[in-house]
Length: 399
Image (cartoon, rainbow, N blue to C red; front, side, top):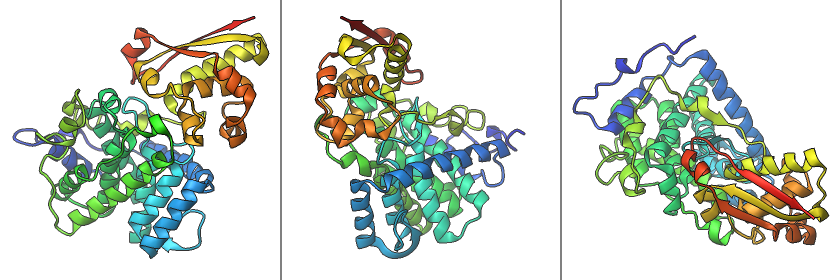
């Protein structure tokens, strides 16, 4: 069954800002999303809940949950893993941190962001607060994925990321604002205000790729919290910038050298972002998955033993060479983000097993010795298709 409308029914492009066009489209989706797309949203929710369930047991997630209760406790919303409840914004913060806690969250590859970890916690919290129906909740998920991925595309994600901004937290706030706005039944003007306010709440840098730490773990939660705030303010009549996404100083202009604002509205109603979501097979940075898969397959097919490996050469993208060529031993997060670590781990054990990134594996001298033989090489062929199509070539030389 097709969706029960066309984009032309809701868009009047003449004398309209791109942000307003997107807001008008998104605000007219109640009861008009095809059943198969609603089913896809349900699958995304299930995947994200699994990520939250596992992630909530991590120490950084437990710290985030304690913070949520300390600053927003006593509300109506569930914090996964705890009996106590919190306000919508702080429950979404804690659950978003848990969803993003162990690199298990879904991906929109071309936008280079993780919609599930932001949108699902935000939608869950507001739906719980408002006692929304299951259908309205799933519609909000579709709406949130649409807004977040389109914001991620429009900001020119490769330039955006190489400038040091973390796409999930930066574009995520728009997804959370749109999802919360749908649940609050904001009209087109109200949703545009929410998106305009979200522009001022976007945050998060890639410094974790340089010096590790736990900061990345809260990025999805912070975006979920900010988006809920933006929608709640808009519902109270608080006005945001009229073209917060694509205006002169809007999100898509300020945070990139490669603005693509037309992607905010191009193909609305025909191309759906939630249809393009990838579920992660490995608990690590998704840009590393082609090399992880290639390494694991080479080792299995040829019966290669770690002691036989003289060197491993990985042909990859500028992004991976600049942001993922790190030691990976500073923290679990650093290990999950390190290309050399991931390649070595794929030789030694099942790369889909979270134990591949345990403190024991990080301290493993065999892993360290193997990792020292990994070299990354920039390959223009992979650069040419990144990020809409990812790949890597792995060469293993044995003794």
